[in-house]
Every structure is written in structure tokens, then in C-alpha cells.
Image 1 (cartoon, rainbow, N blue to C red):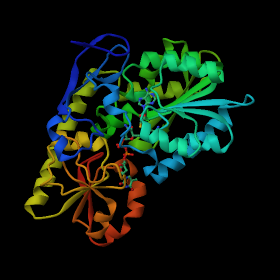
Image 2 (image 1 turned 120 degrees about the horizontal axis):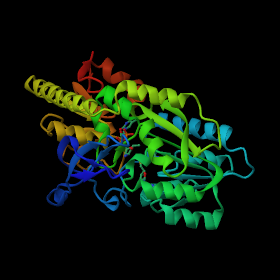
Image 3 (image 1 turned 30 degrees about the vertical axis):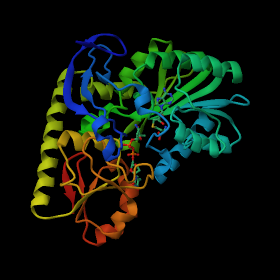
Length: 406
Ligand code: DWN
Ligand code: SAH
């Protein structure tokens, strides 16, 4: 038996995806023999409500100087983070000369807005290559993993912070207790914590099981986030659903009693109970839906192959590593995956070893079908790819259902 990373209750898996490689482990054929795999099983803790991986690769394997994900690859995400930053500045930074710290700041997509406003800021980003892009944009960034030790050093050099921000990183961290300890040390008494991550409720409702991979240790909901932070004297004062990454939740927290709690918080907790997020049966149903989705997708791809159709993947996302490996998608079913990120191009996808090719190859010879691995960016991509559709090209999607967009 394994125990919950948050409250130590013994838990067992409700789904076993089998051996999985790293979501961002794009590689060359000479590296296939040494390719790393871990056993990807997911459990639900009935006490604190946390959905979590039961085993996770070491953090240095995932986040390093050749990290493959650059936040700036989506135009709409840049708009999203500008609005996020503006909201923080308007609502939560009333004191003079505020100081903002962001964990997992990547290439500076969010902090660039604070830097442009001339505000004191610091990014904490252990992946050296993406951190360097941020520094080149003039954004103060330390190449380290956040934790209690670093928090002490930041306070010694800069004083305490007014806001601690994080997007799509809190859920990446199995050692969350040291993160919350660090936040507690770092923040002023009136300080706020604002973070967002893919929302458990959306994953369950949309069967978007590709949100589960090595980097995503947790799928959060309001109840589990409240439980964790309450241990350190913090409370959730607001929740705001986001459309990004296929359905995310932004949580706003501060020390208990320091600010009013929005009615949105009890409302969301009530919704979560109505969805059954606190019940083990919900996750048994989820597993069955994952299996059905997997079977439908692989059948569709085999059928198209039998008809002699060309299928190309769109967006070499980390999420798609779960799809290709769990469904058994091989390069004979999907010819290549088109991606705009230079560090991924010319390499092969983790585990499934499908070639990753520059976007220009997609445009120069449209396939019959494009399998939308970057489905969370559908709006941005559909706008950009009108010519593909006009040429008779069709999109294959699998969230919330497997199907072809006619
Ligand atoms: O949580 C995480 C999120 C924020 O980013 C990380 N663990 C890792 C990463 O996850 P992902 O790889 O699933 O993220 P995206 O944003 O869905 O990746 C999109 C991929 O598609 C990138 O490689 C860029 C590419 N892309 C493209 O080729 N053409 C994206 C767009 C919008 C496009 O038009
Ligand atoms: N915030 C960005 C990047 C998300 S990807 C966005 O939403 O687009 C997750 C990022 O978190 C990676 O850049 C990774 O290097 C970083 N990360 C992982 N563990 C971390 C930790 N302990 N402290 C700070 N950053 C971390």
C-alpha cells in the first residue's frame, strides 16, 4: 500500500496506465535504449480528497537545462497571463512598492507584465534554458527549485512578498509541504497566494485523462486545496474557473481571517460534492470512461489507416505522451507530429517514437486528418488553420469524446 502525499492516509490506485515515459522526454533514436519509464498509477485519498500519482520520477529528470516546454508558444496564453497579472495588480497589491514572487515562471510569460509595470518581482524557475529566456527579457529569475530554504534566502535579500503566484506548477510538486512552508515564510501577514492548475472537475467531466502524466503529480479541487493549506493557517478566499488548459481553477488564498471569503468558495465546494469528487465511485467510473475513450481512438486510427488516409498529430504536447502510450499509437498510425517548438523538432515522441517535425511540414503537405493533441489550444489553432479545413482536411479530437470534426 502507498500513502497520500498530503495526509499520509493509505491509498490504492483507481487506474493503472502502465509504464510511461516522461511527458517532455523527446529523444533521438540513439537514446531509445536508455529511455526512462515509470509506473503511472493514480490514487484518490478519501480523507483529504487529493487525486495523485503514486510514483513520480525525480524532479531533476523532468526539470533541467533542456526542458522542452516554453510557455510563450501560445499567443492566447500570453493574453491570459497579461490579464492574470493585471487582475493581481488591481486587486491585491495595494501596499506601496509591492514585491511579487512567481514559482515556475518559465520564460517569463506572466512576470514580464510586472517587470513592464516597474514592479519588484522574482521568478523561481529550475529549468535553466527557459529561465535564461526570461532573463534575456529583463526578468529577475533564479534557477532553483522553490522550497522553504530558498524562501528564507529570498526574504533575507528582498524582504517579505506581497503576492506568491504560480500557474501550472503547484500541481507538479510532490513535496508540497515544503512549498507551503516556504510560502508561509515568504509572505507578509497580509500577503496573497494565487495559483491555477488544471481542475479535477473538468478532467472528470471531460474524460481528459491526458492531464495525467509525470509532471502532474496532483489533480486539485477546492476541497483538497483547502485541506492542504488549512494545515498552515491559510484559507481559500476565492476561486475562479479558467478556460485555459481545457478547464483550470484559479485559487486565491491568504492567512485565515485576513480578507473576506467570496461566496464563490462555498458554492464551488457544494458543486464538487454534487459532482461526487469526494467519492471513490466517481473514479471507478472515470477509469471506465478512459478505457472506452482509448478503445475508440485506437479503432478510429486503425480504420483510417485501413482506408489509406494520412494522419498527422498537431502539437507535441506533454499530455499527448499519455495518449500515445496508453492507446498504443505508433508511427504507422500517425505519420509525424507537427510542433512549433525548435527543441522538440527533429526528435521523436516519448515512448511511442513518432517523429516531431516543424510546423512548416504540416502546411506544405496537408494530411487527410490532423489529430489535435493540443486540444486545449483549439480556439487559437482553428483560427490559424482555416486553410487546412478549406483544403478538405479534418480534425480528430478525443476530448470530451472521440470524434471527427466535419
Ligand atoms: O502543465 C504544463 C503546461 C503548462 O505546459 C507543463 N507540465 C507542460 C506543458 O504541457 P503541454 O506540453 O501539454 O502544454 P501545451 O501548452 O498544450 O503544449 C502545446 C504544444 O503545442 C507546444 O509544444 C507548442 C505546440 N503548438 C503548436 O505547435 N502550434 C501550440 C500552438 C498553440 C500552436 O499553434
Ligand atoms: N507557469 C508556466 C510554466 C508551467 S510548466 C505556464 O503556466 O506556462 C511548469 C514549470 O514549473 C516548469 O518550467 C518547471 O521547470 C517549473 N518547476 C517545476 N518544479 C518547480 C519548483 N519546485 N519550483 C519552481 N519551479 C518549478
